[in-house]
Amino acid sequence: MADWTNRRNGTGRTEEMLDTENQSRVEGLAGKISRLKGLALDIESETKDQNRYMDDHMSGEFDSSQGLLTGSMNRINHMVTAGKGNRKLMCYIILGLVVLFFLSYYLISKVTGG
Image 1 (cartoon, rainbow, N blue to C red):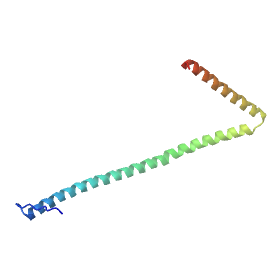
Image 2: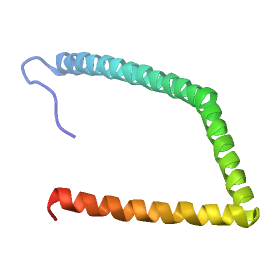
Image 3: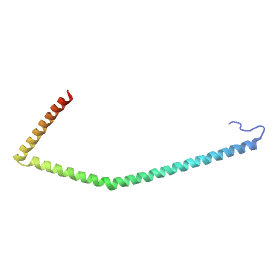
Image 4: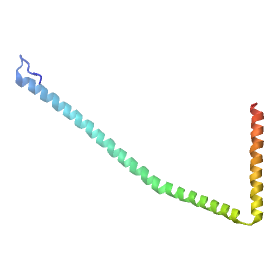
């Protein structure tokens, strides 16, 4: 261990200076710990608020979108399982979408010059 004694002032004065320095560092460290604790508590309360918001608002949104998707799937299943008329209509819709896709691809390629 290093010898901290000062030959002129004696051991008592050096120990007193070291003790004073240690006390000031301890106080500084205590202040930093207090600030960190405050930040941790602020983060905790903010996350609790955000979780509460997500539980309250987002669950309702997900429920409504699930209801919409379920209804759409039920209508599609009903249309597919129905008679020949609906199958014919579905073939026309698919054919129309394919033609629309190729037409838009052709027009976009003409406009961009590629």
